[in-house]
Amino acid sequence: MRIAPQRTVLDALLQIKREVDPTLNFRYSCGHGMCGSDAVLINGRPDLLCTATIADCLSASKTMPNAYATPGVATGNPQDQQPPAFRRTGTATSKTAVSPSLSHSDSVSDSTATDFSATNPTETATVTAATSHTDTPHPTETSSYAESSVVEIRPLPGFTPLRDLIADTDAMFDQIRRFKPYLINDDSSADSSQAAQTKAANAEPASEYRQTPEELARYELLSTCIACGLCQGACPIYAGGEAFAGPAAMIAAARFINDSRDSHRQERLEAIDQVDGIQACQSIRACTRPCPRGIDVGEEMWKLVEAVKE
Image 1 (cartoon, rainbow, N blue to C red):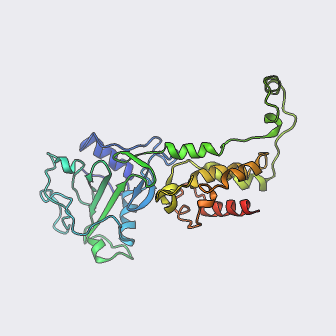
Image 2: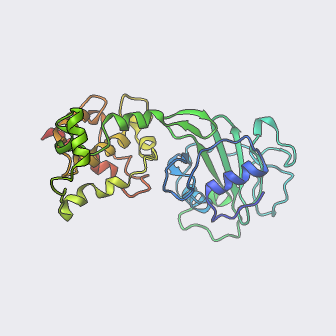
Image 3: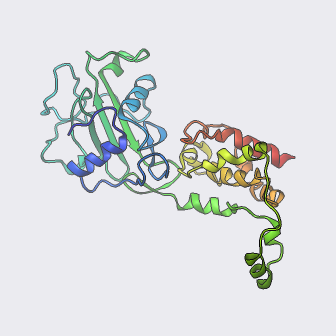
């Protein structure tokens, strides 16, 4: 099985599912980094399958040691035809008959293909690639990384694994809904009687909800959050199993706390000011790095802390 390094990890997994193991399970939808459904842990870092390329993953592996990679562990196939310059990284497994213990296994060279294997189908899928000595080395790579690199994929931390790379994200969305991620304005919600609701539905609005560009800017970027859960998986508090609603829920709350049209700012701040809410945040800011929408999650969390203190 061959795949070009510029293809995404999602492309690689789809090819594995078609050609190697149709039972491999992973989640994806749009395939363009807009839905956030394919969040996983790639080489110890939260990322989206559809935006992470094989080349980027190998480059990151060369500049930073992989916490999950075990040097010298066999994962490939000595019977595969590879150039002599490639160092073997695996044990004997037939390409035509995949063993049950390595049900996602295949082996090829990095210059034209990538080698994929999963040592534990219920928990992880591993992508292994050998790099030719004749390739131009990365400026910061060491000799060991010049010989081989491993791309390992695991379910996103902090979520209950269901099967293979699929994790249960229901808890995250329950926490997001907990903080009422929708606009609430007293003009339409103060009188809850059925007659008043019917009258308000048929009547023209009394006025427009006007905002200045500065007021719009306070929440506009937050509205692009796709609830992928990467910030949750990167957060050592949430991923560590502590009682914490999580950064994704806090960002959803912040989007409406910062909206000048919403008339329940104080109630929203009180709702997040709980031991499992913003109080659980330790300002580590690990949640900032993986956001695919460019939201500085750590900074937004700090702003929430300051707003609650005020």
